[in-house]
Length: 292
Length: 214
Ligand SMILES: Nc1ncnc2c1ncn2[C@@H]1O[C@H](COP(=O)(O)OP(=O)(O)OP(=O)(O)O)[C@@H](O)[C@H]1O
Ligand SMILES: [Mg+2]
Image 1 (tube, chains in turn yellow, blue):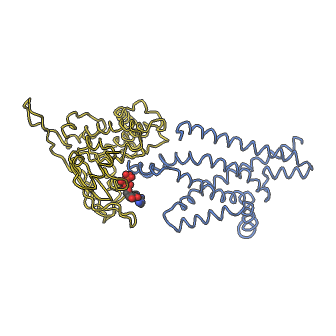
Image 2 (cartoon, helix red, strand yellow):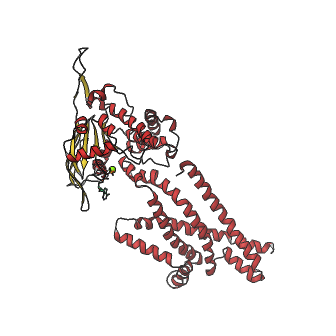
Image 3 (cartoon, chains in turn yellow, purple):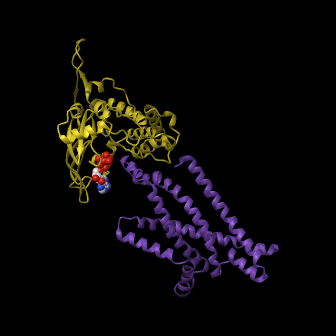
């Protein structure tokens, strides 16, 4: 799987240039022509570590005892039945929902449920994590270009000219250069989601969080979004993707985590988890989604 | 109907406009903290705001006006007829606009806040760049139609002696014993003043709709 992913690495303007050096690099060991090239990933820093995470809304316990690590350059797919807490876990990672138990470390920022996060911590955390929502959440009163440019100006203090140049490059990359001056409503759902991805990437995140990015889309439009995400993964972006797209989980992600009832059911390399789940519950879930 | 009659009624227009604009401005400003209280996290503040809004809206404008002018104005403070009229209508307007603001806030999809926070936008920018422009779009149509209603309500100022359009019309009709024409002219003036308000509202709304077309 790694082979597939890291062979054709495309450049993705807007990605942190120094990320490339940290990110898993392919070390080609063999030079024998008839031997298969066997890449090995080296130097993969941990970028997310979640320890014993719990989340309750009032007395309703939604997440319990979640442990998780994601290394730089990895793509983790989170799957599981509706209501299992996938979105809540993702939202805890950038503190849209503060966890009620446990510790999250993301890009070097450590947040403990026991003590409230400082403003600086929240800022650093959210700067490091870009998020893409199921419902796109573009700003309807701003043009596509402004949607991508404004956060760069307000968050990173880039000049308008600088931000616009970067935005155009990113829009080009997601195939929407011609939409720059349109308003979001004039764009299809698939286009809107690609714009949302560009908007998040424009802030040079270290990790991208996707919450069912294609669930609100027709299958065809979903494909164009998945293509962009695949390209992003190939460019080495660290990603956590909550998804119902089993094909994506199987082929693009390195690892898969199956959740149910607020807990981690299984977690491991995507091929083994998807093809050979160990628990009954996971087997049933995969069976059910495959038969859909 | 002679030119003099016409001019007398015409001379009421500045006061009609002054009271309408004054009360609307006062209400638009006071409505902001009132709305903030109404949606605040504190239960006490929310309750207080709900009560204030309820009281302001349940009592007829003319009762508020008499209360201010004859009640407070005659006993404790010197409140002139114009001030009383602006304050009475302004208070009621603040309650109504606070509710209009609140409705607009609710109409903004929660995803807009979440996206802004996830993007780590600073507070002031979320307010100024993201929320206010969207709020204005929702508020504008209801606020302008409220303003047209307020224009008509400003006629109650005639009861405390403000020489606005209704007062002047009443004055000349008594003097000349010709109510029909006089009040028809007064009515026409109200229509003429409200037309530009409606036109501006429709124009700006149209421009914004064309852009965003939600
Ligand atoms: N703000 C909230 N207040 C109370 N309960 C909540 C809140 N957000 C989520 N929940 C509850 O937490 C549980 C997990 O929700 P969550 O949205 O994380 O599930 P999910 O796995 O993302 O489901 P789906 O696949 O339907 O998106 C659900 O029972 C939900 O009702
Ligand atoms: Mg969800």
